[in-house]
View 1 (cartoon, rainbow, N blue to C red):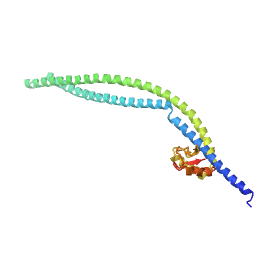
View 2 (view 1 turned 90 degrees about the horizontal axis):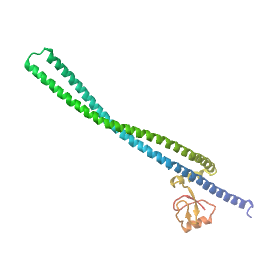
View 3 (view 1 turned 90 degrees about the vertical axis):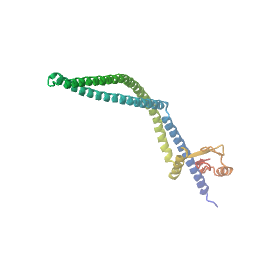
Length: 254
């Protein structure tokens, strides 16, 4: 005769398995909620707006840097011209001093010196014309740099506002995330370690889904594929047992 307690143990074991299945499904529900909140954080419209402003700022900074480089190159050219003009002017003054100082009396030498002074003067005039062209080229660049600086200040103000709104939106979602994480930790504590490890592994490779319910009696709720008649029959024969979907490998709850 079968002892009276044996059926009770079998029933208790079945209930334990059922409880494990429900606990695991509850854990999956929490993980799905966590994934959804994380996704919401990533795709917040205000984040897209913030990223767009940052892209505009980066583009503006690149343009500004290019304009500054152009202006600085013109400034270097102007300094070189200034140095050359200064050197030539000093040389011309020295020749003037010799021309009118009386130290040279030879007419030919005086004529050559006069011609050199005139040549230096023409060269100085040419260099000064080049300097003027550079100054004229710098003016619109400086004006554009001022416009770029003004545009950046406006973008900075907009970015500050958007960043504040993003922080507020994130804070609200992060509060929900923290609450779900606490609930998830409680749910995970009720799942046996070996089953939890298997679930985590399947979830990592299954797009966040480690366990799914059987839908419509013959469809996996994870991959949404229809199971074979043999598999469905096996699941129906043992409705209180976990199995794996023959299509996607996820844990499958009846």
